Image (cartoon, rainbow, N blue to C red):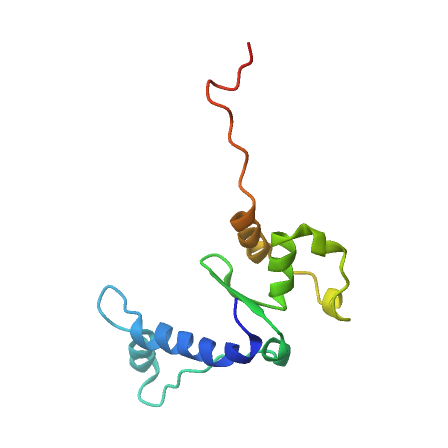
Length: 129
């Protein structure tokens, strides 16, 4: 999670790393493959981010193998509420709850996993005498 004002620069740095530094088994980067396929005129496109992410107080960023790179505006509210459930009754700035339904529960499940662990079974198989 990071401040929205930092998101564009951090995502640009991440994207540069992914396309220029990450190598395949033959030692070639995505830029190398792009050049081989499309020639010298090939360009690596940057990342276009919605304006509301840059304006948000906090942005949650998850890079999931299955779902890709996901960003959630004002994710600090979710993290704070999980850490302190008493905050669930507070009202937040207008519009926060009017956002579209999350297409994935990955970010929420990761925050929950950090705060809530399954109860351990008692030793002895859980049998009572």
